[in-house]
Image (cartoon, rainbow, N blue to C red):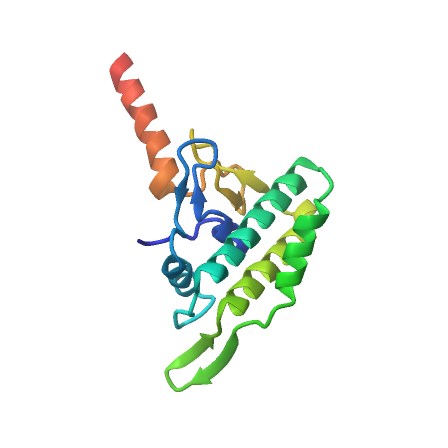
Length: 179
């Protein structure tokens, strides 16, 4: 399995590991090993951490707390105290240990490091939420949230490879059918 990183923020990319939230849900972190692979593919760590079932549950709880807080922030609602407590507790965890080697930078750590980096990314994001153009993908079933950094502020899809191409292909087929 390959993960996608199109949201423009580590915490939002982590939230995106649960796809199609309003339809047939697709869990990309179905196993502890998936969580470990995500950490490496996201660049949080350079070596897969040991993630057990409890660690996976902890990461999923963080993911859902971030998702709810982002939704509340986008809607202008007050943040849930329990979700804030989850994010703040994880933001205080031990981050990845970075080392410079002749081969480049290595980042090592465990579940604490993954949770800390995701939570700190969420804190930075949510702390400046009023200054960011956060959007939810307009794809029919997609629920991925992203930071719109496009020049005109008119980005509609989480990414072209998945949602953007689907919408554009459907529009093309519709135009051809009516012609």
